[in-house]
Length: 120
Image (cartoon, rainbow, N blue to C red):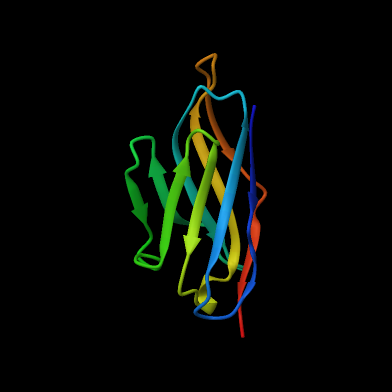
């Protein structure tokens, strides 16, 4: 079983920055891809950014040039650096990881999320 725990959310003024972290634990052989998603009240969960095992990244158009996804394989940590935050970035942010356990069973895990509020 793979567990993900997000941290780093909070209240920030427009134009500010936050760095979200996602700690992965459990029996993992490999993490093939990891992503950050967000869900605002009354809206569906949407993709923010993804990063593959080969460090290929992909971003939603709304965050391109402002957000950066990264990973530290040794620490089993994933990050989302968010700059130039806007009120429309307000949402609960979730990390997701998919890969294989040591028994080569596939996993697709979600964290509980961390709230990001952008407001003056």
